[in-house]
Image 1 (spheres, rainbow, N blue to C red):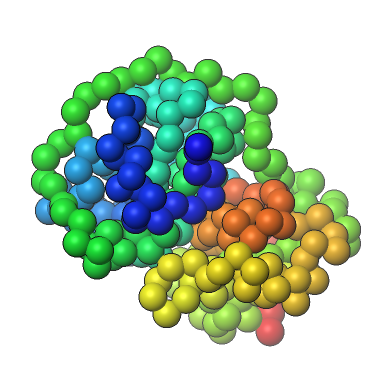
Image 2: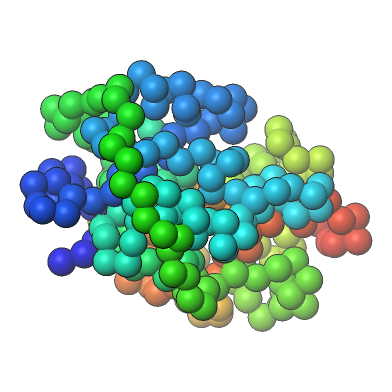
Length: 279
């Protein structure tokens, strides 16, 4: 049995006893202190976990017009996945300490390569520790594989030009918080506001008070209340990261796969000719 959306602490512990244990990726990160995740990893992580850095491992080069966290080239990410020991059929579990936005980005990227057996640890590092799970400061054992044999992109994405053409025919979900969506504040990008026609779905609304994802039926009802999926859904946020959280939540709720706009607001607002909405 493979896990393809979420995995519980108990399920992960069971997998760690089999002959081929899962590959673990610690994706903890802080957008305002880009070294914080690596420092936290060095002080304690799940035994055997590799550290996946949002900027250097889970993103590509920035041009100033392709957003703050553009997708890495697929061949480069395939090589990174191989370096972590990921091969077809190997279960991967991603986690972070921030409610799963960065773990969800790694989940999406691996699915994008065509790797199905990848899941996010529900509740992340906090759930692991709350259940008495131990942490380690040791580096993971090296077991590199060849670059992952990526085929056609298994997770759809859309660029800014195509999205602009389709604004009237898609439903855009924006995963940022309400203040940023309305354009009242903008701590990270040059322009405040949102893409015209977008609907707010703050990614943290996918979580319960305990930091775990809400039950699938509850998530499904909440997304359906937003009109999903009456039209094709495009997921976006500030830079294509927390949007993956909504993608994961919808997949876990049985609502299928939606499309990621990787550049998201940071790319959209870099061109003054693209329309901006506020309020």
